[in-house]
Length: 107
Image (cartoon, rainbow, N blue to C red):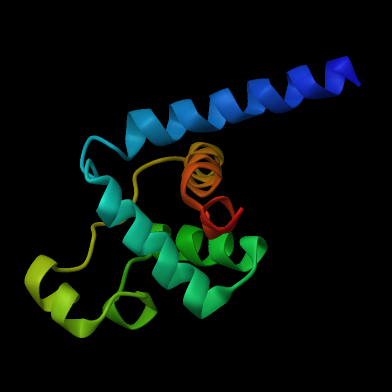
């Protein structure tokens, strides 16, 4: 059991590092990050679907596959496609979800 706990903790740190180093340089406002996860949760509900939708959007961002309202897109535009490799992008998404998922808010 102890080994399992260490493994979980190490994976959280790994995911957190990918998220911190690749995402928070542009997305510094915690409120903004909470808003994104809220909208993804409303539309996709499960952790697996949320992560899949985030991955798909970040690889091929388009207005029609965004969860943000058109007013947001008109003001800020559509994000450029991620240049991260698939593994790193998934680690960053895992870190983002670990930190901001709504289950943490409701516990």
